[in-house]
Amino acid sequence: MKLVLATSNKGKLREIKALCSEYEVIPYSELLDEFEIVEDGATFKENALIKARAVYEAFKDEDVVVLADDSGISIEVLDGAPGVYSARYGGENATDKDNLQKVIDDIKAKGVQSSDAYYTAAIAIVTKGIERTVHGWMHGKVITQTRGDGGFGYDPMFIPQGYTQTLGELDDAIKKELSHRSQALRLAKKILHTL
Image 1 (cartoon, helix red, strand yellow):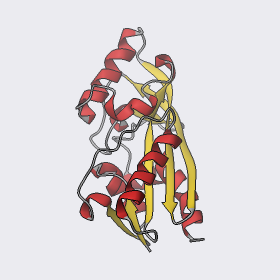
Image 2: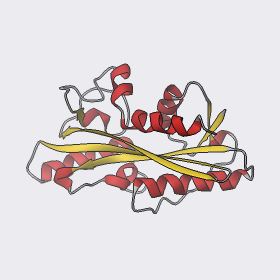
Image 3: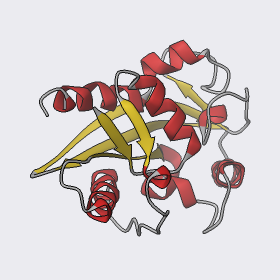
Image 4: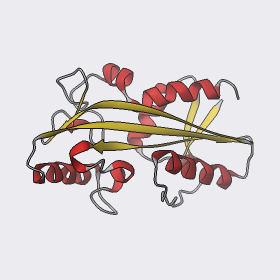
């Protein structure tokens, strides 16, 4: 089965390809001209569905199977921020590094060096007559320093529950097991197997 990903995020693409090796995983941008998708949903689930629907409709091929992920980090001391704004927390054209630095600055402004936090991944699958969503979570804490250069996004500041190293320091095999995205993809595969 060919899975079309409604993302051009290289980090997500790499992770999803590794976790879905039994499928041919292709970013939509290799098949269509990239276009802007306005992610104005209030939840990760809404944004994942917005992306999957937009790419599915752009194909004009009802047999295509589109998978979209919307994910981010929610930090207790920041009242759940950045949440659905994780990818653009530092501003409209912010890089991962910009977003990471803004979160660190905001946590420090609260007078603390760490906070409980969790990642959420919502995955939407859209194909002919079917729309499904699943979720995965990874709990832990964030710290106001970066450690390690693995992963992407907020990984260098996030320490999963039960560990002392950040996701930026942990081995890929461990991250693959813990990841909010891998948890959601395990559930998504159950849906894909029924298609």
